[in-house]
Image (tube, rainbow, N blue to C red; front, side, top):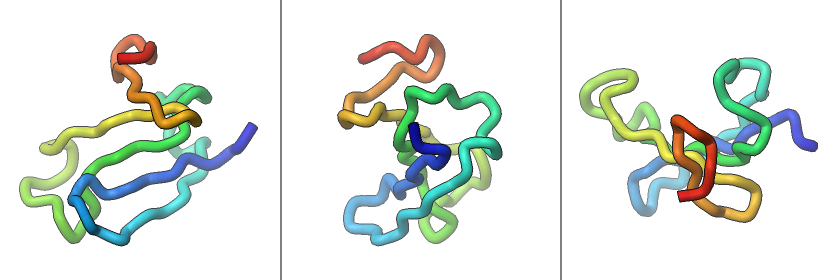
Length: 70
């Protein structure tokens, strides 16, 4: 099991991707492998004023409240 989560920008065509230590993301369960949200280049209204999409290792989207497949 990986101890890192991949962060990708929601903006189509943006090359920004980074790996974040899972320990920093306290509320994110181990089944989450990727989080898609706007990177600092593309966010317009500041932190948490944009959507965050969560995906498992197979690329399936997860509900952010129940952590089940959508």
